[in-house]
Image (cartoon, rainbow, N blue to C red; front, side, top):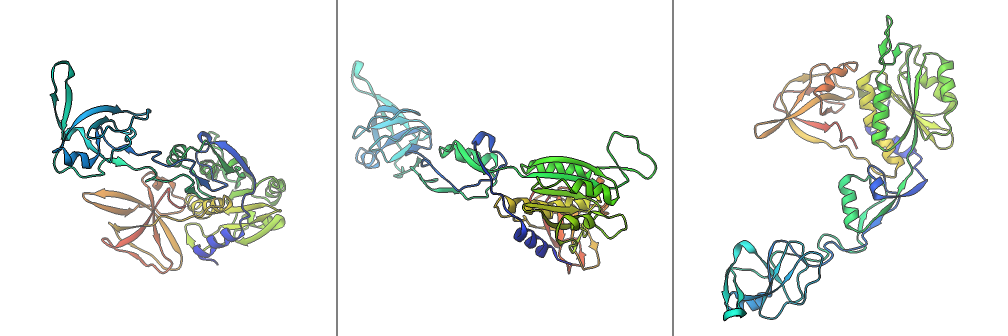
Amino acid sequence: MLNLDQAQAEIIKQVRPATEIETIPIGQALGRFLAQPVKSRVSNPAFDNSAMDGYALTHADLVNNDFSLPLAGESRCGIVPPKLTAGHCMRIFTGAPVPGGADTVVIQENITSQKIGPGNKLSELINFPENTQPGTNIRKQGEDFKQNDLLYETGQRLQAHDLALLSTAGIDKVAVFMRPKILVIATGDELVTPGEKLKPGQIYESNRLTTILMLKEMGAEVTDGGTAADDVESVRAILANTSDYDFVITSGGVSVGDHDLVKQVFEEFGQINFWRVRIKPGKPVAFGKLGDHGHFIALPGNPVSSLVTFKLFVLPALVAWFHGSAAMTEIPVTVTGNFKRKPGRMEFLRARIFQDGENIRCQALPGQGSHMIGTLRDCNGFIKLDVESQGFSAGEQVIFVPIDKFV
């Protein structure tokens, strides 16, 4: 039986990455994975500009004129100002280009002004603080990134803030990998679609919906394959028509019971790389290949086991398919209660991280059975216990994995 690291490494090694690419506008690229590196078309800032509303000047002129300069001209956004007149200052607004010859901007709150000159030839004299330093309040061209700088590598998943950066860099379209085609199936004679009347011994099916929604969040094109009965022919009939899919994901049917048939039928159509992992919840999980480009991942039937194994195995498989790299976020945090257990498997306890005054604390939630989905109401992550761990006591440090940070 593999441990978690070994199983994840095997998946990454065996996944056959995406090859098909499409180019789309950045407005359609949210959640998509880059198929090519992206470089900036422009520098940011594109030109020296003011960080504040105030006055642009040459610091040497300021010192040579007793920190008072007559006002001449204005620089505002969208217009290139004339060159700064020697011995003068210029009104400037946040984001506006710094005029040629200026090397300092003084914020408007730090000045005083007075009218000077005779009659109808009045002008304005601006008085500046004597502690004014050269170079202040100017955003230099390219200080954020320069033209042709590498912004993102292949495999980067694009979030809203990434698209804002690309837009600032002048990028209007990006090459992304095509969406994977994924078939999702649940197995079990006892499963009934919500809304239907339950008969004795039946339960409502939830794993398929959860899996489909999480796959769509990853940008997949998902087909709902419905529910298969617990017999070889039913499972075989579904798996016999999967050649068009990049992934087939099932829930249930991968343990060692007489009616757990998914593993048995998968062996007829593909190659199983592993089917048990030393974790809790979720020991019965299988991964392998189908045909010349497909993959299958068989998840356990218990709802929490299915959720946890999706995050531990399906997410890294998809990221690898998209040419990316996955990394689980692990946060050291102080735990509030006690938990004792028998070592032997890595375990993921449903937990809640919360603010306690000035401190961040973590609580293992009651009800850790793999069938107990109600605990997820209060769950925002998991306490990760290593194979050798015997548990923890209140006040000790544990590793917390946010529920949305498994990759």
